[in-house]
Length: 365
Image 1 (cartoon, rainbow, N blue to C red):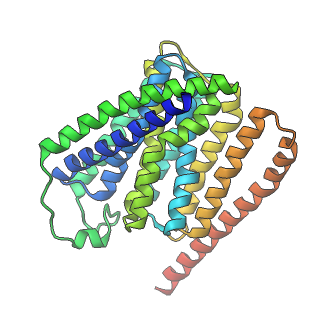
Image 2 (spheres, rainbow, N blue to C red):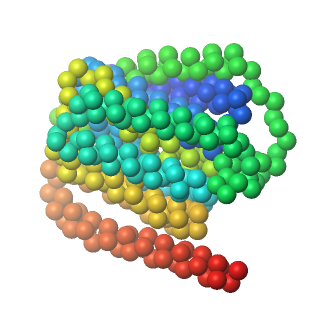
Image 3 (tube, helix red, strand yellow):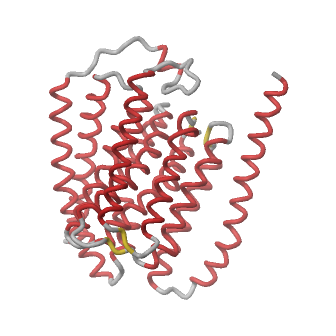
């Protein structure tokens, strides 16, 4: 029954997110926003809506472990699993704006959330600060989109040359888009309640913490819209939306999901020691590694996608070995201490090669 509840909740969340994305994207196109801005705002918010609904619902009902684990786990999942899978499907091109503005913002808000959590709790005023930053960031993106529009010759373009060359498309009608948006929100709220109830029961039945369930089952489940959106965008060649969706979702997860959960929680949101010692550092490392990956030639190659995916598998395996006290954990930990520096060296070499190639081109020019 518990598993059935979670499946029903995930189905409702997925349908609700799809309706919200379609409705929100229609409203955004009606006012003339470029696709990158839509990916960073409307699509990112829509695909993060399950995380928002689940975490706020869990925090409000007194399950901070699920709320926190969902926010942290979704960010780690977005970068290592979804970005990795998308890059394996098709090497991803990275917009200049992402490198100069959005990725530094993503790193900054993740670091701020970790700083707030260092004392073992996130209090209401800290949640409100995070949520206020969300309003400022979204306002900045929409202002940039409306002011600069879709001009591929812009020094920091908000769209691809192909998109700029397309003739203007008729704007969607506002009323159907608004109805879809409302329906999506309703389904998200209902689906979140069902999923949280099932996840809490599963954690109790398995004898593991709410944090572990939030980091794995709930985080992957609520990331299904991001997985579907980014993979479909990568397959269709809309690689600016694929990457923008992930970066935007991670920013929303820290500011809206974690900030919103801490704002509505009746008590300060407790942060377990395991989250501070492992899960926050892993999320932060995955977030920071995006910058060198994105700089290397302005693209994420297939081998980099494989590296991200293997990192996520290694992290999830470690979580379950640690939670169950498996005797293989010490040997596995030693293996990670050997593999991680090698992966770091590979990324550093790739970054050095890309910068060296760019410098040679500038000299030749």
